[in-house]
Amino acid sequence: MAHGLQIKDEDSGYNKNLFCIPKHYEEDLERVFIPHGLILDRTECLARDIMQDMGNHHIVALCVLKGGYRFFADLLDHIKALNQNGDKSVPITVDFVRIKSYCKDTCTEKISIVGEELSTLNGKNVLVVEDIIKTGRTMKALLSKLKDNEPKMVKVVSLLIKRIYRSPGYRPDYIGFEIPDKFVVGYALDYNEYFRDLNHICILKERAKEKYKS
Ligand code: HPA
Ligand code: MG
Image 1 (cartoon, rainbow, N blue to C red):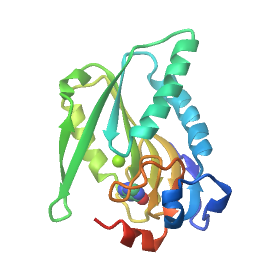
Image 2: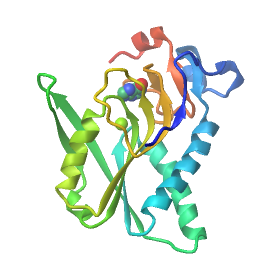
Image 3: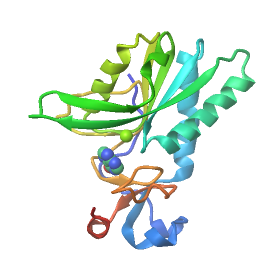
Image 4: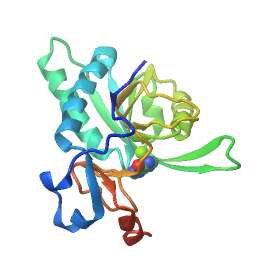
């Protein structure tokens, strides 16, 4: 069972004045929650775990856009480093999907996938790369669509999962950090498209939500 680095409910992160924050976001952030360096260190370790399990056969790394793109790029850098320095190596190809989800009457989530022709996943080791998982409903729906294409193996890595009591209990195969149910931005996670251009994962001030409201 994957756990990830646990960030406790009472853990509020770090004073933002001790980090470099883009000027245009200085007033919007409460605290630095997960510093960029820590994200990269944890990502290196995830890459090692993933290659141990999947590194015996062609891997298709499938990025869930847009929020997954930073994590995807950094994770693949680490995977490539392992793949070129080890005794054995496997081809790694990439695909990208965007998911639109809509939930009717809360029962089962319907999703539509925008992106690649998924038949290329047939017979491959597929690694789904996601930024954050809250309830897991969208991921379950995506997995059921991927399985229609008969991949050899499917694993899911999520940089973050939110600790939600009463959730249906989906857990990905690999987890970067398990965090409290707070709204976070940065490292490609957005609020109405803002804050993707922030390196650290941070907690927003309430009034920033008002400022960037769509
Ligand atoms: N931040 C950004 N996007 C999200 C979050 C979050 O905390 N939770 C679900 N999607
Ligand atoms: Mg996502």
